[in-house]
Length: 111
Length: 127
Image: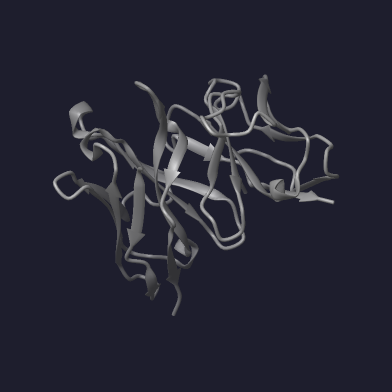
């Protein structure tokens, strides 16, 4: 069982937007601004999409955005494209070992 | 361009040992905090542990399920990170990645946002 809770799957049509939630506790997501999101295509390493709740690394599309409220963080993908179909993971810093906990992952299907 | 290349994975029997390596290039390795993350088949990601740079003390931390069995080390002269895994269990079967935190200028997120990843090396623990 993963430390952070994500929905197992979400789906959307091209051009639409979707949101993936990530629920933790007051010891991780709720305690720190250090929530990250990753995209992983089959057989590939994860790719960092969002860091520090809502910041995008250089080169990541503006279509990806993040937010947080209390113990729950969210990733929103707007203008869905076929290449967005992948697994998405959230993570949170937690201040003591294990210093980072991940969500179980959400499979995004673009219909 | 920063590159990480893992090696050393393979098939090992329960109770056995394996040493993984992660060769880094394109960065000042001695200043980097390096992290190991694994992904069990069909499952999510798990933070295994991290070694800080020697310039800030070289502290090493592990996740409880591997503490006492796994050892993280680094050789800054060879730009290489290691993961020594002993007393391996079936639940250690996974793809093992080395990774580095994201840096924007001097603002580095070594412990919370992993930007550069290796291709992963597969460890299978089975009799």
